[in-house]
Image (spheres, one colour):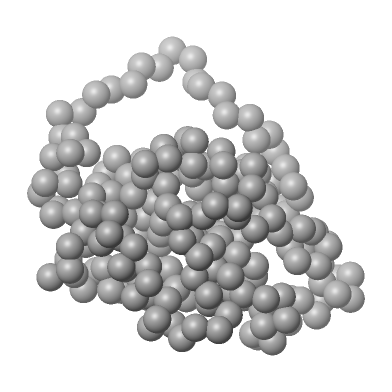
Length: 206
């Protein structure tokens, strides 16, 4: 599966009259991508959905793009090779960019282990709209949380290219936010993310 981003021929971008700025005015909040990254078991999905619930309760328009869910459809044809992981993130980035234009606060929960792929996502979506949130959790704690037994299978060699075991995870150098999901309670982590979003002026608590 190629990861090259090519433009279809004979197409022209259509400029809509309902703009992103008009949607923000109607919705009462700005749009952006909250890109949660970290090891399997670090709590990305749990945190993303908890943050979404809090934002929803505040009247924000949100959607979570979850790694497993996306692979049931949009990326169901991809495996876990380096090339397929790259293509997976490329597709998700393009989808997230469309959601941003639609005025949504998008939360993505993907391991996205390679810095280069996350940097490409930032470039595609736009640095001003891309918030990288590193869910920091030690490998030991991630393995303790592993209810599906994936780490054990990876250590036995039953799962190839498993991040943290047989494939590397490249932690962000300068993420917008580091959340200690390995040692802080979920409520604290959610509050930390919401506080950052308010500081950035994306929404105001009601």
